Image (cartoon, rainbow, N blue to C red):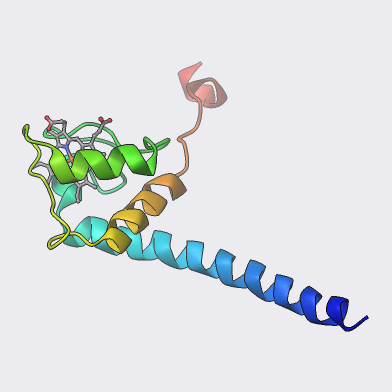
Length: 112
Ligand code: HEC
């Protein structure tokens, strides 16, 4: 009988905490993205630039992104854990995931 009175608030607390953590990490990810200079090549909202491809919306999965960022040896410099922490990398991914898609051209009257 005591269990439901205990579990319900716990479940609520976990839901609230995890939502908060996601919002915070996308926000922190934006900071890490700017601080680490990703924007210089990939644009401020991951739209891509003259030097780097588009990263958002719909970024590749975190596993792929992490492996690429740590080990790339092409034009993009690799970022070791000393430079970019695991947390910052995950936050950057959350930030890129939080970037909305742009409007469909068909929904813009001037273009139709
Ligand atoms: C000096 C320019 C430069 C900087 C700074 C840079 N990138 Fe890149 N990035 C590139 C280029 C160019 C590529 C394309 C692959 C290549 O040529 O190395 C790339 C590829 C990627 C890819 C793979 C994209 C795909 O679709 O395969 C990811 C993910 C990525 N960058 C994330 C980041 C993040 C996150 C940062 C910051 C921590 C960052 N990059 C900083 C230039 C840059």
